[in-house]
Image (cartoon, rainbow, N blue to C red):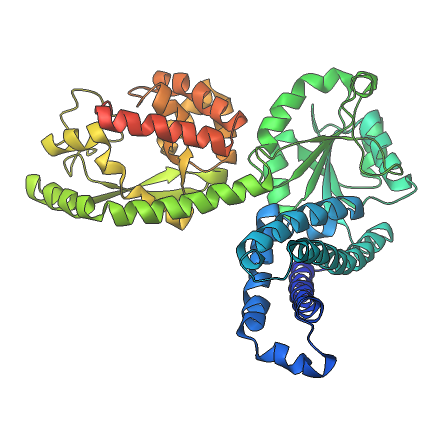
Length: 476
């Protein structure tokens, strides 16, 4: 089943439910509060507020659902979670509609406000969840009947891996795992257990090949089933999987994990597996962060446009060369992008190869030093934020030349590629610009701390500290 078509169906039905709920609310208020006669129903359709609501209200609901992450992973939905999400979104949306659209209406009694609120809450939730329940039940049924499957890679090749395969294949309710193959942890040499596993699925290689296998076979889920003697490899495997996008990672538990309460299952019929949470924030926080990035960048470019123009003129008149400087950096998921800045160095600054700047760097122009003190050179990066290659707050993006050196000493640097780089960062606020690879590694711990504590609140704190650094001229 095509996930895109299912998503479109969800969206269309949500729009239809929202339009119907609004229409019924309008009729309810006209008949119940204004005592409209059944023969005068046609007057409803001549009311401009009715048609405004029919158009605007569903768009508001779609925005809320999108922020909630409703339209992600539509083939993996659970009916119980769908109920919880729909109820939460309905309560939030109805409260917003009440205060924005209904509270100013003239009504005969205050009770009518509350009747409108309750009516919309019940009717909107009932219509929306009923449509979703039908769709979700159909998808779940197709998963259980093996009509829908999720490409899965099994990591491990011995007894536990083979037993995990058997458990998943023979469980009472099929969970949708369609194995593309397995990879070995220690070596590619076949063993008896591997021979049994190879009889039911192909050996794709070793853990060194994981990323390529996931890309080539569009793997959606990875199950780690390694032996006790291979437990030391798990951290390395997880680091490798960190750069593989939205892949769901699960691991077979042992008795200790079950006793400690680490095992959570979605269905009583499914095999117990520990799901490794790769999401750093809730879906709605990602949406809010992106929305704030866009609004903040537009506002900054508008308010700073006079300063932008003056800076551009000064860059052009104080040293020969272009106004802007674009350099390839490595960003989200390891993808390269062009980062834009006002040029603060002479045009032949790196004629001898890449080099990090320092306090007495002769490559920096006189006006470039002033720009760096107050970070004027960073203003064009708001364009990168609007494009989506950067965020306002993230980590300092580096060139591949330096990433290769950092990774040799601190392989955990690659974990940062789970998020977008930023104009400012916790590392820059707490440590500042790095002038050596050793300092980059030292700064890394602050960026990793940020990644593990990502939230809208953390971003606001970092922005406040950044503004303080700008006004104090402590940049370099």
